[in-house]
Length: 231
Image (tube, rainbow, N blue to C red; front, side):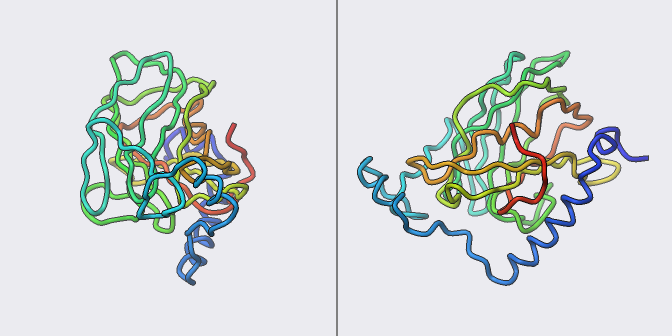
């Protein structure tokens, strides 16, 4: 029998099919680099620092205490107050910033480990679906339940995000008996920032979500691969 969370999202199969198309398109050689447009001049006026990923934008700052390898960057533990709030995304491969999470219902004080990567590397519980342009793995200290309202806060940012283009955010849970399972997805249109493009509502995939496991991943894909908007 499928987990209850899977029964709540009938659009998941359509999303998975769309991802398969996106993966095949990615194999054909599509580039995820942001072209040098008027955004470059705007960021030059802001006094952007050198960024090896995209020299015309400011590099996203690192999180306090983050560590990393050639495959990923990780923050081992961030506290999660029950009222909801912001989590720092480990800066890696031109990505960084923050994601917001709704108020939580938990019988214990929550913490979370976040791991950023730009490819589905092998080893351990690596991200479940190849073809994404960004992977954010999470490991909660205890499976939480999230309420409906996502607070406002700083966005996920990247030199790889193109303003005014649509991107799809998907959430997967790692079930120890079943492996990786797709839970929910939504799309949003990127806006501009001094760090490149930005996505303000990535944490919307956590709204009204009752997680039965402690580990999973949020992934970002190019394009509008679902009809549900992140709000």
